[in-house]
Image (cartoon, rainbow, N blue to C red; front, side, top):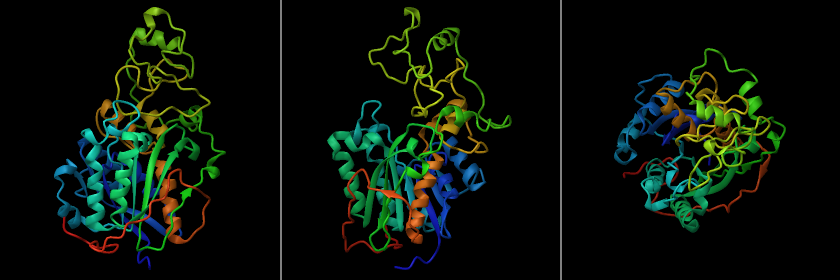
Amino acid sequence: MEHESKIFRLGELFSGPGGIAKGAQLASAGGYSIEHQWANDIDPDTCRTYAHNIVGDDESPSVICGDVKTLDFEILHELGDIDAFAFGFPCNDFSVVGERLGFEGQYGPLYSYGVKVLRHFRPKWFIAENVGGLSSNAGGKAFQQILSDLSSEGYRLVPHLYKFEQYGIPQSRHRIIIVGIHKDIDVEFKVPSPEPYSDIDVSVRTALTNPPIPADATGQERTRQSPKVVERLNRIKAGENAFTANLPEHLQIKTATKISQIYKRLHPDRPSYTVTGSGGGGTHVYHWEEPRALTNRERARLQTFPDEFDFIGSKESVRKQIGMAVPVEGARIIFEAILKSFAGIPYPSIESSMPVVEAKSDPQHPGVGGHTDV
C-alpha cells in the first residue's frame, strides 16, 4: 500500500521520561521521521520530565498523567490519530531481578492496554519493550500469550533480545523489543545488525569523561556516603562487588542472597552493568576510582541521554526515571531501522533471536488506520 505521509505520529503508553521519544525525535531516514502526538505515564515527575524535554511545554495537554487503567481513550483520540505506537510496559513482574510474579503480579496485565491501543487506533507499526527475563517468565507462557495477543490485532511481529552494549551503548542492558508492522502494509522489518557499531568505544571511562560533563548540566548532586561506605568502597577494586572483594569482616555485607551489583564498582574499560531505578544501599552504581556513587547525570550518560536533557523531580525520583528508561541511542537505532524499512533503504541486519510471528487474520478488525470503539 502507499505510505501517504513520511511523518509518523507517535503515541506512547508507559512513556517513561522520554528515552523512547527522544530516540524517535532523533531518528530519520529517506525523508521519514517521527513526531510526538500523545503520551501517558502514571508518575507526575516522569510526565513533567517528558513534557519539558519532548514537547517543550511542562504543562502540555498531550502528556496525560494518570493510571492507564482509568485512561479515557476518547481523550487520546481527541489529541489526534497515530500512525505509530510505543509502549515499554512496566517490567517489574517479569524481571530477572526479584520475585518474577509475571501475570499474577500487579503489573503483569498492563501490556493489555497496549493491545487496546492497537485495536482502537490501528497504527501502521509499533514497538513494545520489556526486560530480557520476559521470555522465560512462567516457562515462557507469559511471553507467548503476549505475542499471541499482539499478533491477533493484525501485526507481524519481530521480537528480538537486544544487547545494547553491542550497539554502541556504554551499558550492559538487555531488553526484548517487539517490532510489529500491520499486515496490510507491504514492509518487512529486520533486526538491525550491531556490526556497524562494533568499533565504538563503550567503556564507562569514555562515556563519562569524553567529553567532560558540562559544569552547568543538571543532576550532578552527589549522594552522601557514610565513612563506613567510603571505607568499604576504597577496599573494592574496579569491577568487584561487596561479595567478590577481600573485605574485613566489619565491612562485609550480611545478606541471604548475594546480588552481584551490591557495591559493585564500574570497570573503566568496560561497559557499565545495568543501570537500575530502584534499590537500597549498595545499588547506586559506583565510580571505578572515586569512592562514591555515580551522579544522576552520569547515570543519564550511561543511558545515552543528552547532557541538556533535564530531569524533573527529587534526586531519588530522577534516579528512578533514568533507571526505568530505554537508552536513547538504542531507541534511535531501532526507529531508524523501521524508517529505512518504510523508505526501502537497505541496512545491515541479522536474524531475530526469536521466531517471527505472523499476523493473525481477523475479519472483525478494520485495516490499518481504522478507528474502533472500545
